[in-house]
Image (cartoon, rainbow, N blue to C red; front, side, top):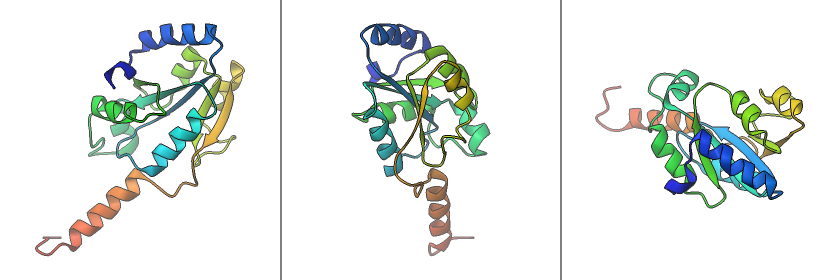
Length: 166
């Protein structure tokens, strides 16, 4: 798994070789703080539309800013290892910042895949992808899974436990 987790510089070299070989590059991103079946379905579908799937994983600081106090649950290097464990994922790069606009501009993947909580028109990096001639794909099943929802449910169940002080 560790050889799937690469630096930005390593990714530059890998992409240069892959594009020269005519490979179709798909890029997706997320926090992947608490993995669930929706993540797997979205990643699998994203892989099916290209030859190489790269996952941009938010670093700890950006997850904390996006998700709030107490997040992430797991450090970025552990989340990266879990995501790299999926057969459909070819590479994982850890990035900082709330959006992947800079990475998209740098890597210029053929396709930027986002989950079904977005539409073609609401993808935040849409203009960046269009600026270099890339495509946007919406992948995965309907948004019925959410790490935040799972955590809320766990908290609710914990409060109901006998002996809970809540």
